[in-house]
Image 1 (tube, rainbow, N blue to C red):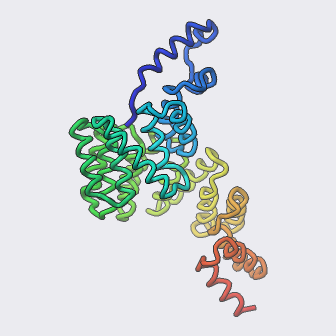
Image 2 (cartoon, rainbow, N blue to C red; image 1 turned 90 degrees about the vertical axis):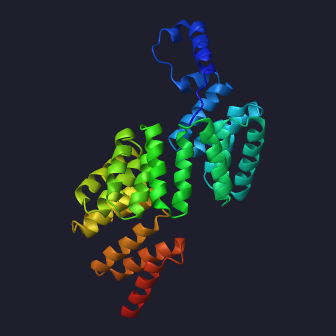
Image 3 (cartoon, rainbow, N blue to C red; image 1 turned 180 degrees about the horizontal axis):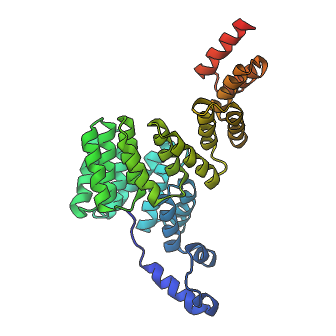
Length: 331
């Protein structure tokens, strides 16, 4: 759920009046407005929320932090910044407690702010206090019975507690509130996939229809199709994924895996594994599978080298440890 910032309309009109060239353009993008007004708190908040909705948490944090620095009393800026702390990459325990404190203060200051209530509930989930989390979720729903994010959070708590029936029900209710929010379909898909239910493909497909260029969505759908025997469709999606983001190593890995294990194309498999480790030199499964391919060629020296690369990254990687142990017996 995002608060619509009506003040943004005033800014757009002001910019249009100040510059005839700008006013003659039919569409002024948010990024262009930010270039012209880099310290506009409403613009920073809108951009941060936009990035949060697209799951780009790292960039969202920058906008949320800047808006908060410019005006730490602005409720919307504080909500965004606290949310960014929760979802930031490499989040620490200190980040969670800081967000918890911020949300607590926000709820005291604005007890009917639904985003603050849901945010506080979210931090309580991270702190494993589900009972209190439900208290604030229900409080939010009494204020806004159509709050999508409250239902999503309820579903997540039920999922953590292994109550899958109620989790699905909560996610489906969230879909009813906002049928165009692709994240809810991803959550439903992951829940069905966890239960080994092919209905997950249907949910991921809906997410894909809403976000056809989102690599996380493409990957989820491709992996589900591969898992449930639709290898050709999965292969097409993995190829699309590498075109959308050429640095996404898992796409190349799965193309290699399909070439190796489904289509018996070892040369093609090796090509994709090498692509995977080129874009991500820490991609352990690719090194391991390269080792398997070298073994098939009876190139034991390169096989050991590949397994060694995997173990250098993670010395506990059991699959490669077992292969090294077996090869040393044979050499």
